[in-house]
Amino acid sequence: MSVRPGVPRWSLNVPTQVLVAAHYPDAADALFDRARSFADLIEATRKISDYEGLPETEMEEGATYRTNIRIFGLVRCNDYQIKVNKICHASRRVETVESNNVVRLWSHHMQIKPMENGAIWIDRVILDAGAMTPIVSRYARFMYQHRHRSRKGQVIHATLSKSSRSVTPQVPLFHPVD
Image 1 (cartoon, rainbow, N blue to C red):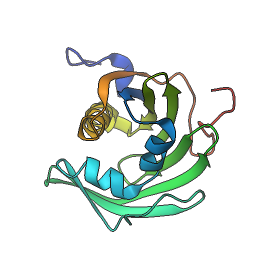
Image 2: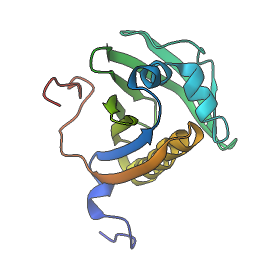
Image 3: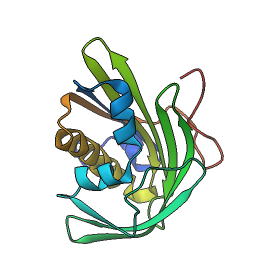
């Protein structure tokens, strides 16, 4: 199999992990309130994507939301489903499982951790989009970085790697030991 330069061989056949972390001067609880808001998501990504039909409300644990996404005004991502599996206020964590006809699995684990001078917002996504995984994972990394810049996040770190977990829609990412 021929692999393009710069594209890791593993990224063509296995789920990928996208990890993005950003520091904020905000208090962790206030940041967690923003993190659970679809209105905040819509605003943070308005320059790169449009979420048709996504309510501008706070996420509810156990709810499934459907939206059609238009990326850069060109690429349509229809019938995208976002299921909110877990919201933990005590540890400021949210876990969603997302998918559509292209993205088989987009498991998003988000956590806000307090720090001495603010908080750190961590997005960890394990995704599988079949042959499109290399493209989708790079877009995901770009999109999360963009979201944090839009929210005025500081010192944004982003990595892309082979997923170290076997993930299916039935195997959650939310683990007490994490």
